[in-house]
Length: 331
Ligand SMILES: NCc1[nH]cc(CCC(=O)O)c1CC(=O)O
Image (tube, rainbow, N blue to C red; front, side, top):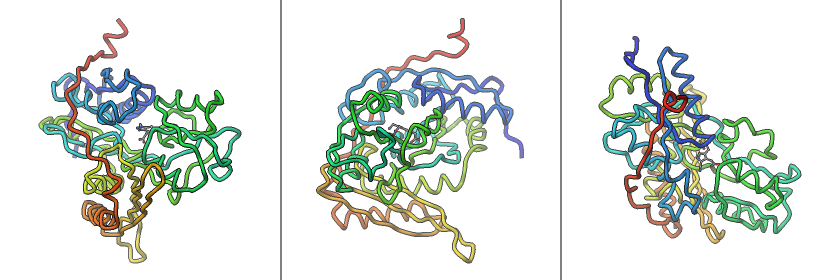
């Protein structure tokens, strides 16, 4: 079966941050290797310009909203999102047509003198802008002092290299994509810190009625990754939590001795001040990721999770976007 081709290059909309361009280029190269022509188009978003805390800006959805606007208006044909930044609610008219094999989903510690989490002294200052990471760091009971930070990978690593903080916690996948994992001291065990739902995975989005692009993006889809992130995001959805909520989830595909595949799902819900921490798990059949996630969310809610789930962010306002194609820029 051969995939239909575009008659012109596929226009791939990307934010201009180093990580976004790296991820987009990676996907563009994978598509080119399969014989498709791809052109990168820069889309400027509010999240790239504004360094205010995410919560004040209306949540992480700001990153996705501008790209989605450019897709819906037909300025670009596809977008590469970090799946964890994508709101769980579907965008009418758009579809996630491909979820490629994900990177290591775990979080990673960058600390002074190569210290690991267990080696950080009481009172050590750890930077993170993520309520999920803050809640799990507090739950360790090490007496760490959590400081709210924002910014791109460079900025956040800079807090440690400039001596302003003892450590920061980042997504390992982000560091891996820009080739800097050697500057980290420890990949954090999910027993201590569960990653954000969908962390380390990319979502390839296009217009629902664009059959040609849909078929092209489906070539890069990985069934195991799709099953895992579907289960993780179902937890978030059933908790009615947004992507800035203190919720961690990690699904793993396990093979039973008789060869059947199952999904093993773990989740964390907690308070950023450490006053509540819940860890629960659920196992179920490979073909029911949504149900497994919903059952786990039910358990968490029955055990008191609702107390620490902030209300979901309102739907994103349509942001203004500007686009610059590669060919225009080089003129
Ligand atoms: N929150 C921002 C964000 N969105 C995606 C990644 C990293 C890559 C990924 O998880 O896919 C990061 C950086 C981080 O959390 O350190």
